[in-house]
Amino acid sequence: MNRKPFLIINLVLLIGILGCESRFEPLKESDEVFSMFGVLDLHADTQWVRVMPIGESFISRDTSQTDVRVILTNIASGETVELNDSLFQFSDTYAWNYWTIFDLNPNQKYELLATTKNGRQSSADITVPSVLPEPVVEYDTERETGNISGLSAPEDSLVLAQMKYRVQPSCAVEVTIIFRYADTLTRMPDGSYEFEFLNDRPIAQELKVPQGAYRVNMRRLTIATAGRDWPNLSELTEYEIPLTGAGSNVKNGTGLVPGISRRIIDITPPRERCYPTR
Image 1 (cartoon, rainbow, N blue to C red):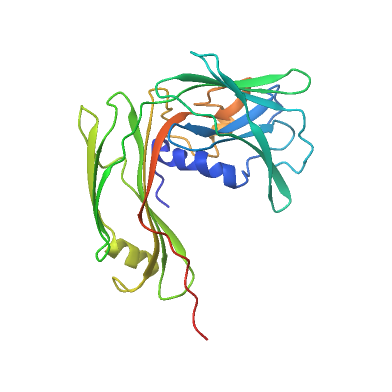
Image 2 (cartoon, rainbow, N blue to C red):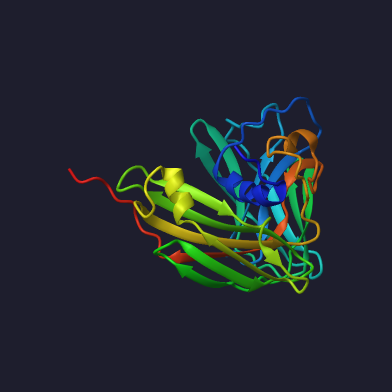
């Protein structure tokens, strides 16, 4: 398996970790209070952050996390909001995700503060980057070719550029295939960027079928930028981050909650998978 730089893959991890369990087990006891994972996305309708107490195991089977308050504050304006809690279950493990529809402002600093009923706290300082305009998309669905161009703030890092497909050979099992371009695209000093791709053949090779001999149920483009405080942990995997604490912006805890600006565009409307006729 080819390992991509953390700068690219861990945006996917931080977003995806809200929907799956982590298998990390701490190696030693810690006085830290919470682990916090997620992103503050300028262009999202709802912000989600996972906040979990640090205990004997990173995999929680305890549903009794109560009286934990998670507050998001705009440092400049002083405006605050308390996040709502939601308990998610994955098999026999549980995770607490906190959410809010609080509107974020570009180029602003925020504090995310989690407090136990006994007053113990973990916090993260987060900088939200500039507005990311929607890209210009030219796409040929017959050959799965695309030309993507756009403009981003030159002071921000372009941390994610990807195409995600849900495909089926005939009406067999649906497969998700992702191609990433952030480390190969052309980006100019003014923040403009452009990249091209031809994905028909790579998709066919992944499915082990002739070119065009598959059904595409989703074509989704994602572009994201982050500010200068985005960590560069190219030598670490997602499993090593909790172990080392490297790149964490969480005080009295562990984890990572950066600010991003993300655009998600469905090239064609997603459709349901097909099933074999009997």
